[in-house]
Length: 219
Image (cartoon, rainbow, N blue to C red; front, top):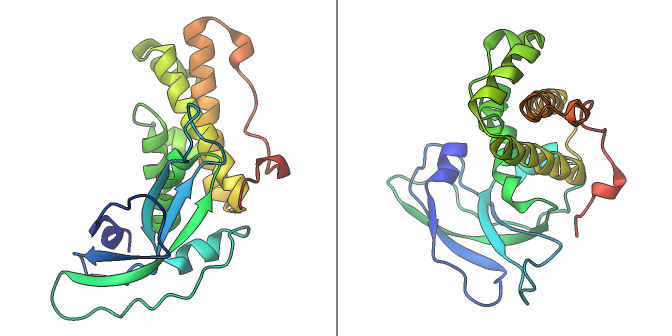
């Protein structure tokens, strides 16, 4: 299904956001998308009058089954797959305000394929040792390797990605133990690496906090 989403093309939206959007699906190997998610931030950037909105095709069943705080989806009339390719359909647009729009693709990909190994690959700047991913051992040597290989600025950028993903997970109410464990592991590794690289042990803190009501930014 994720492969199908990657094959979607659509004309860019200008001015106001329409209620529906015509898209072309080039890969018909699985179910067609049911909605186009319009992801935006609760705040404008740089004093801009309009919020930046990014469109992502999605299957409502996947998101609704994992996100307890997701608003209800409007009805979709996407047609079933037909012979041949590509296929043009019109699907409703579902506006969604998230605290970290830029990290929505990380969460979406995970919810579709449930691969924590691939999620960790995207959250960390280097390949995670297999034994660390399985048992949580060898964290300190791996963090030291990252500290010696990458700048503190780059490590901080990855830390902010993990934090943004966590904020979205809290806002959407995603209760998936494997996802939370992966975020905690990436968070601990990155902060330990920053602490080693900067010689600042205070940068080392515990795991990400549990879901917080303050992080809910859905509208």
